Length: 408
Image 1 (cartoon, rainbow, N blue to C red):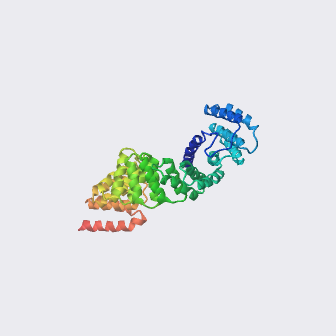
Image 2 (image 1 turned 90 degrees about the vertical axis):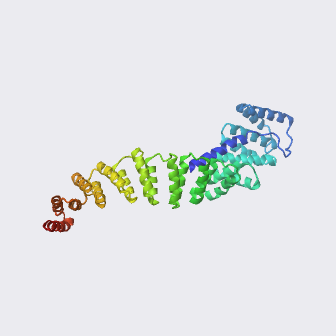
Image 3 (image 1 turned 60 degrees about the vertical axis):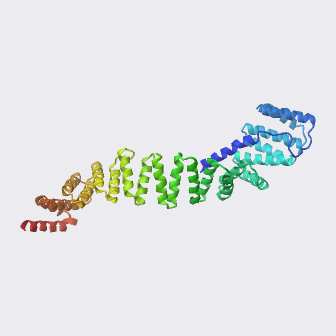
């Protein structure tokens, strides 16, 4: 958020320099007369400012400042001109101090005074004196509610935001956006940041949709909107946004692609999840690890695409250090009544080792041999299963069954 605010503030500072570019000697509301000699000196100083000869202009103004009466109109406009020079030189603190002195004379015309107050508020923002800025600009805006100077509203929004008074900041930036034909991105980003701070995620989602419309190729907006939808538990909307972002090529990391995969699963779309993951595994957009192939196998299983699940799990088993996945593969083959495939998978599981329940593996192997008509091999498998306490009783029952079957 701070970055967004800094960007918005930078926009305000650009306008600050432009706003103070011209400091006329006379204003529209009939200022007091200036002695001809002094007027001539002021005019020369103004010419030097126009030519960017700031050092010479400052020397001339300081010289005549010493000769004018305190709290006079002449003193006020000289101080104001000096302030403008420091502004052009990006020395905002010095500029603010001089403008404060100019206003303290109470000698400026009403028009000049209002312009100077506005400039001073901008200078406070530029020098990170945010409390002074809002205390200066807010009364000015109350006095000029119909001003067309958009930057005043923006600066106040920024000022309150920097003071962490987010709810006070909101009406100012909302006013600017509402009254603009085409809101600037930086305004919308500030509005978005404020909604985040007050945890108004529904409104934040609305702003992000506008930002995406303005800048559809900015990846960060898509990710933020998907994240907000998840925060709001609108997982179907989150999936829609994430999937669109994926199709636009914005999900360029494995973690983001896996997040989309999980969103498909959460939204009970295992087939789409599996299609995505298989595509990325084959394209090496996601690492071909045992765990990732297992994820794919589970997705295909949930989608009841057992042939695809078997292929994926076979790859996962090959890459796994233990035989546990081969055992899982054997179970799937048993469910499909593919007895020879089950025998092959379970034997690989036992050979690799590292099984949590070896006795169960022997029971499943025995069943597969039995169903395949290989009674001698089945007998051996069940005999091995007797060595494990958890499967001893079951193994004995199967051995008894095989004996009876052989007699019959």
